[in-house]
Image (cartoon, rainbow, N blue to C red; front, side):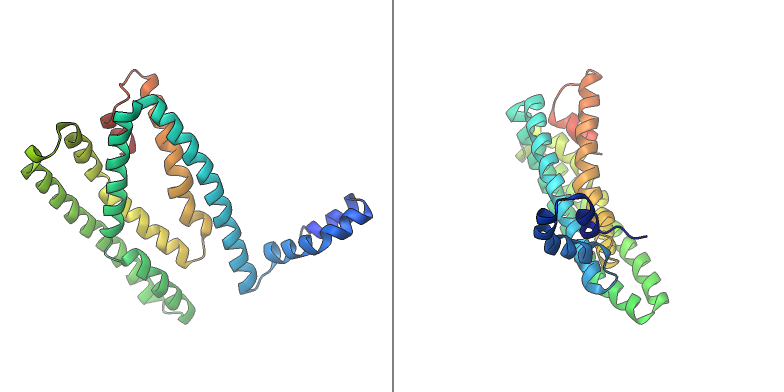
Length: 222
């Protein structure tokens, strides 16, 4: 038996209040229980919206705590390196993380199973290979121009570059999940799991006696 918010409201709420809420609750029932494309799109949008709301709360709390733990100088190093690596990791996919959304959906719709398997395998291998190559170039460039970079940035950037293939693969897997309309699988690793784990591991590192520096934060991210 399927749950119905409108029916439940009719049973539990006073008649006037239930009548006022009935149109909205019926729309919610159609959104959550619909089996057509519109219902699926509505559920995906609702899940994505809810995850973004929770992520905003997590981001606010984590930024306040990390800034208090690390201080403005070390937190600034952490943020600069992390944002740089996220942007570089996204670009190192060379567009595969967005193109798979189109082609996976097309191959699924047309029943082209072999092409779908080839795309899923090739896209992962390509993302790992391209991001690893860019990471190697980053290592070489940082080593060659190390004297031109402030000393307190060098080690955090070395550690951040290690994350590059992982970030690229994560972006690609997010695109594959989006192509299958798996909203929770697509968004939760990036917007829920990763920031919570970074915050928890940083708290554990500080409790273990490690200094609250950008280097320690980058090790925690890895």
